[in-house]
Amino acid sequence: MTAGFPDGFLWGVAHAANQCEGSYDVDGKGLSQADVIPSPQAMDYVNIGDLMKVSREQIATAVAYHGTEGYPKRRGTDAYARWEEDAALFAELGIKALRMSIAWTRIFPNGVEAEPNEAGLAHYERLFTRLRESGIEPVVTISHYEMPLHLVTELGGWENREVIGHYVRYAETILRRYRGLVRHWLTFNEINTTLIEPYTSAGLLEDPERPMEPRSYQALHHQYLASSHATRIAHEVDPANRVGCMLARMTHYPATSDPDDVLEAQRLNEMNLQHTDVQVRGAYPGIVRRYWREHGIEIAMEPGDEELLAEHTVDFLSFSYYMTLVAAADPSTYGQTGGNLFSTIKNPNLPVTEWGWHLDPVGLRVTLNDLWNRYQVPLFIVENGLGATDQVLPDGSIQDDHRIDYMQRHLEAVREAIADGVDLLGYTCWGGIDIVSASTSQVTKRYGLIYVDADDAGHGTYDRTRKKSFGWYKELIASNGASLG
Image (cartoon, rainbow, N blue to C red; front, side, top):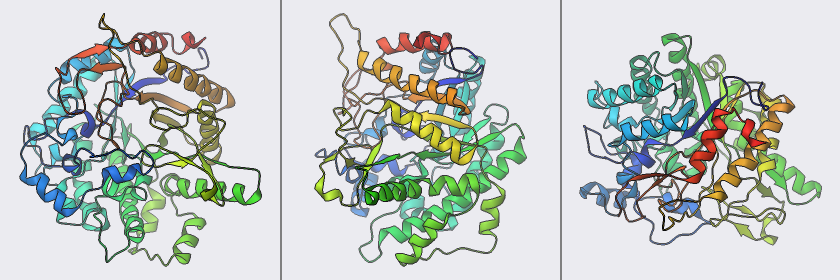
């Protein structure tokens, strides 16, 4: 042990293909659901999920337009074209892991093809090989908010059980192709967002005749089955593979010590953890089945579904952590603040970012201990970072002390959780290099340790510049956390 972090701790950075790659129509790539999300006309940081919704009419308009203007995720931050430069920067940073995703539509452009697209497969093989040569472990998300648009418009997204087969074919293709190059896999990104933002996470379009919540739960059931199939195949292909689920952890505090507030916080925490209960424990918890009964939700299951979930559970639990939330039996008496896909009651004890997120490093320690005590499987923090406006000074430097302070305080909390006994595989900060924000589609809501010269309209050179936080994190990694002090 060194400075509280175990030997072999996977220090790293994280990003997603749909937010950084760009090159949306290069090398045979098909359109994904992210490629048709237009730039928001106005920002609403409280009702932020509305920024990520699209209608069939908007999709038709987007498909007819062959360009990038007004569609930020088609541009990303040019990572597909600049992958060698970015890989060299990551090697210089000294990271031990790169958490990233494969763009499904680079492998199967429409999701239904019988044979994969070799150009896409070859691209990621080159990238993974280069990472391994640099001592960097790829941690790969199979599906991260970029399912093929064809599966959305023609099959109805994950509500349709047929999508399971297309996902499994895709997953098996990449698991076999990258055997030995990738050993850490995540089946879905933030799977719980299927209930929060059904289009982004599950490809569900609004239908005024059909309520969204029952459809979302049906889609989740199909995603859980797909995850179990992928886990089974991963273990068959290579027993060295380790497969994780991925949760956007939403730790709720009660607004007061009123028992009704405490009960509401407990309920919301349990509803958030239903997803990891299924994927780690292998069964739906009672609170969810009660919720279905009380809300008239009927899930279509086939014989063998529950057995599959029970038999092929994941090896570790990964999660994103950005903030804690507050729960009250009567939330109408409290003000709201913004968030990432969700908003929350204001916590008077915590400061907020310029996007309205609560800053709560202690909450990360609370979260780690809660998850470890509940599941007793290795944990992995695969997203944690600060979205902020960064300024380029006249000398060309970016003095992002705000980001350093954020990471310092959160990693001090991580160190304490490890001392508490939590088994933690690693920490990959979100997100290494500046990206297009998932929720607001902004580049200027910057997360990276590496600055990208681009604005929200896509103007700029896209040149890379190391921020001050780059040097700070490089020293931290080299010392295995000792430089935290």
